[in-house]
Figure 1 (cartoon, rainbow, N blue to C red):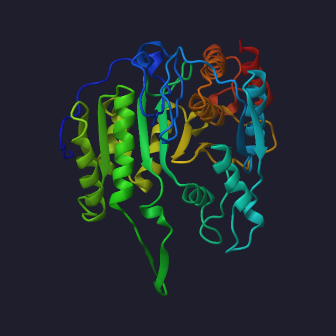
Figure 2: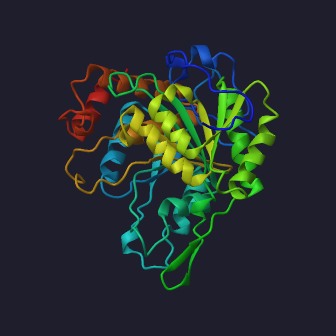
Amino acid sequence: MFGVYRGVIGGARSAWRMSDRFIVSASRSYSSSIGHQQSGAFVVHKDVSNTRSFSDSCSIPSKKFTVTLFPGDGIGPEISDAVVKIFEAAKVPVQWETHIIDVLSKKPGEALVSREALDSVLRNGFGLKGPMETPIGKGHRSLNLTLRKELGLYANVRPCLSFPGVKTLYQNVDVVTVRENTEGEYSGLEHIVAPGIVESLKVITRAASSRIAEYAFKYAADLGRKRVTAVHKATVMKLSDGLFLDCVREVAKKYPHIEYEEIMIDNCASFLVANPSRMDVMVMPNLYGDIISDLCAGLIGGLGLTPSCNIGTDCILAEAVHGTAPDIAGKNKANPTALLFSGIMMLRHMQLKEQADNIEQAVFAVLSEGSVRTGDLGGTATTSEYTQAIIDHLK
C-alpha cells in the first residue's frame, strides 16, 4: 500500500506505559532513567545550545518564570483563567504577562500582532496561547501562521495518547505528529491568475525539511521511540514532496537504530483509523501535519484533550489547537484540558517537574473517577466545577 524506504510496519505496539505518556523533547540529551522513572509528562526543550539535560533527580529551579499569555477568543479567556487558577493552586512559580489580540478589530493589511506582544514572547522565552479566530476566506492572514512566522516556530509537536478513564473507539493510542511549521501550502503565497482562476504556491526548501527531519529523529532517539514515518504525496507532487523525502532520507542515515519508513498521506489516514498502533512518530510537511494531527486527536477523544507545542530556536509557544467555540463562549461550559496539558508541556521545559507531575496526576484522577466532566466528555460539569475538581486533587 505504500513504499518503505527502510524498515517495515510491524505488529501492534506493546501496551502503553505511564512513563511514556505525553513526552515531547528537542533537548540535547536525556538521562537513560527517563523512560523508567519519569511519571507521564509532557517535556519540551528549546533547541538552544545551553539547554541542559535533566533526570528525575534534578533540582527544581528557584527562579520565577514570566510567561506571555494570549487568552484568545471565544472560550479562550475562560480556559486561560482555569489554567491560571490551577497553576496558582499548584504553586507553579510563574507570573503572567497578558496580551490581548483582537483580530476582528483589525483592518486588512494591519499587523495582527503588535511588536510589543511578539517581543514579550521572545524576551520571556515562553508563551501560552488560547484559541484565536481568523475570518475565513478573506481579510486577514491566519493569526497562527503569523505567530509561527514572526517567532520562528519551525516545529509543531503534538502527542496523542489515550487518557485514563476516557473511553473511545481506540485504546492505548500512542502516536506523535511532528509537523513542519513554516512553509508548504501554508506559505501564504496566493494570487489571482485571471478571473475565476486562483493559484496557490507550495514552497518546500531543503533547509526547513532537513531541520524538521533532524528534530523528529532526535526526538525519537531521545525518547526511545522505535520508528519515524515520513508522510508525503510524492507520487503526485514529485518535486516538492520529493525534496522533502530526500532530506528525511539523508537524516535517517544518521540514525540506523531507528526504523524509517515512508507512507502516502491518504494511506496514513487509513492506517491510523484502522489500527493506530501501527504508527509511532510521524514527520511531515505543514498541511499534512495539520490534517493528520487533528485526525489523531479524534482517536483519543478530540481536540479538547490534545496538547500542542510550537518549538523555535528562541522560544516556545504552547497552545490549545481547538476552535474558539463561540456557541458556548461565556457559558462556563468549556473544557480547559487541552490548554492545561499544553501548559504542562511548558512546565516540563522549565524543569518544573514536581508541579507538572502534580497537575497531571490531578487531571488523571478526575477523569478516571468520571464524576466531574465537561459536556464534550459526556458530563454536565461547568468549567469552574471541573477546574475546582482538579485543584481539589492537587497534592
